[in-house]
Length: 228
Image (cartoon, rainbow, N blue to C red):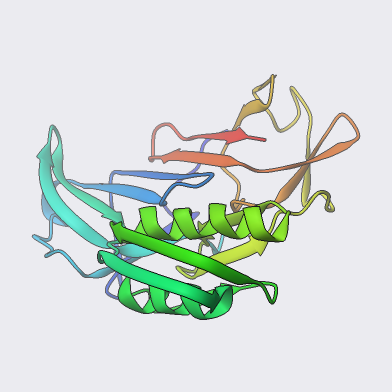
């Protein structure tokens, strides 16, 4: 079983592109990343900042923008993700919701959704990279709310800060030899299907949350790795 270009749609600034290879990665507490290899007449000379989306079977698995353009054997390599601006805060006796909103604004995040309890931080200070500061805020929120939280960009490009779900319903059941090539300890390999970070998958009658995804999609050989 192989996946062809008709199953994977890539758009750059709203226009369909035909990369010879697509790599998408999303892991816990990491910014999502995508690389596109454009070969031959499909090379575009795209500039940094243009929007990029990747869909699999009409379901979005990545949204971001071009961070840089390089060269790789076989063509032009576009490196895509989220470029957050540095931020700086120094608050005393301020609500967590307000602090998060300020960090989001400084980081130049266009779309964000958060479930933050009504807690107040006696003091919160940070200075540096936008993603590092948002992670620092998340860890502080966990300390004062006494609950685990998950910070991530979803496949639509929105920043999410949500309480860590302890259970959920499986979107798909994986079985070795049926739709999974390999199932090991907290990791599996399969042919690509549209999964998203945070989805729940079924394995041996148990439901597990997806903590990491890696797609490598090309006309000749495609593979998906899932960490759960």
